[in-house]
Length: 141
Image 1 (cartoon, helix red, strand yellow):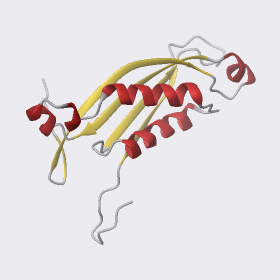
Image 2 (cartoon, rainbow, N blue to C red):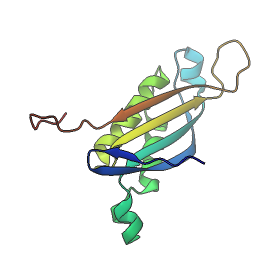
Image 3 (tube, rainbow, N blue to C red):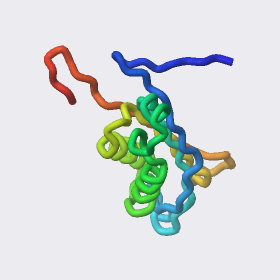
């Protein structure tokens, strides 16, 4: 078994993982996808410091899974995208903007019924985004 610790600067980062968020959405390039819709599955991995939550056992010291779940479903069900790349990017950026503790987010979107003319398990994307760190000039992006 391999154990690892993610360290950024002076901060140790841990992970929260939410797998298998399913929703029905109307995303895709083809007219049929946009009109008929299909099922999508999203996995989310968040990097954030969880040391305080591990000691306090208090929800305010972490990220509420229900809020992440609701945000992902809201974006997936209420917006429309031609590309799942754009949907994944929007999800990742919304999490980084809405949750101060989250330093990095990975979004995996699976599209099980992608119309590619053949049998596949799924087509998908993996988007990884992180907050910019302070530079030597003291500026943050």
